[in-house]
Amino acid sequence: METKGLKILVHASAFFAPFLVPFIVYLMSEDKDVKRLSIEALLFQLVLGALIFVSSLLVIVLIGIPLLIVFGLIGVIIPILGIINALNDEYFSYPIVGSWYN
Image (tube, rainbow, N blue to C red):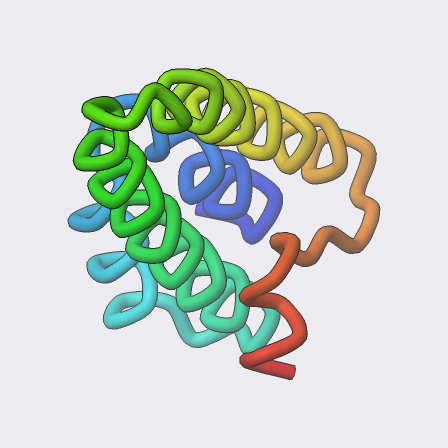
């Protein structure tokens, strides 16, 4: 499978297997860009999961409801932007975690 298809798969995995697919792609791919992208996607999903968990605990204080909405939208929009950039063969780095990994 070419790298464009693997990049699209890693981004789209946020909707069906956000932890498993990037990990498997990281282990099986030999391309450096695909490995970087799969690690970033995995870290992004872990950070987003932690933020959603903390927001769900804050629902009791009512500030968690808007945070859940914002983080939910981020979890949908960012992978879609990644898919669009992968289709156009453009560089994409996940926000926040891209600066950790690079």
